[in-house]
Amino acid sequence: MVADVEFHEVTAEPRTQSIPLSHLSIELGHLYAEDFGPGFVNIDRHFERVAPWVRQARAACAAMLPEGARPRISTCFLVDDYRNETPTPPEVIEQLRRAAEAHELTIDYVARESGCVEAEGVALAELVVDRLVPDPPQHTTGGRPPAVESGWLCNGERTPGRAPAMASSSSWTPPQESGPNGHSIFVDVELWSQLRDERIWSCAFLASVWQLVRLGLLRHRGEAAVRPYRLDDAESLPLGWSRLPAVIQLNPKAPPFAAYQTMSVLRTQFLPVELAVRTILSQVAVEVPVLDELGRRGAHEGVIVPEQIVQRISYVFVND
Image 1 (cartoon, rainbow, N blue to C red):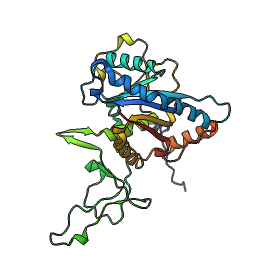
Image 2: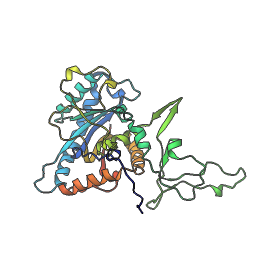
Image 3: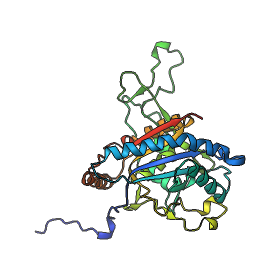
Image 4: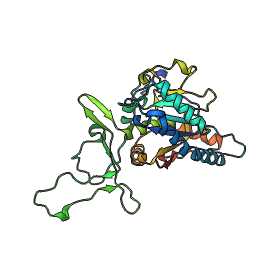
């Protein structure tokens, strides 16, 4: 008797690609289209506030590494070109470079927010939707559709949407955070809205994709879902953002784009957005081979790579 045997094509199980990694990725900013106004004054003011925090982040990263290790720290800047009229790439990139250099900063990479929707033919946003594993709330009735259908994701149990018409006020049930620390902080996040047949992705969801890309955790068929492309000639930049790759490398000597950990220096108006980002990322299931590969590499370098994705992300919020 021959035992049952399963055969698989080698190519049917893509190998997890190993990608270059920095120790830390520092996001120098994420400004809206209106910030690129006359004279780009807001950009210069932004970098003035950012610079001291970047120096501290660099020092902190170096202090966390084993003695004698040389820190690999890359910087990036996210341009909001998603459904907004942003000035042309030559204008924006030149002004970003000038403002950064004026405050002794270097921008290694520039990314497009719309590149978090799709890059190189890969639907990144949909890729992350497919990896959502929402926390199962207790006592759920199934009255509300799952996040992948409704476009809403929360960190616990929502208040029931309907109650009997004659019910007393004492029958009201408050929302409940899953695993609260004392009192609940309940968060309900809109991932997208629908405009006819098009999904309009929320800022929080695209920022979640952005963090996964920077952490080197988003893969497509085993390969990095986004690759930075070297910009050799700034004068040859196209006039439309859609004609640029999702991530371009401005600094030819830059450390790797992706990193074990990220730090973002953002204006305080982004604080609620990033709370939503952390809610989303706490419910994203990253491929186990990717997590294992990064963990082994970190251990080999003497770098602590936190198990939870949200613990790999830090922020500094600066006032306008």
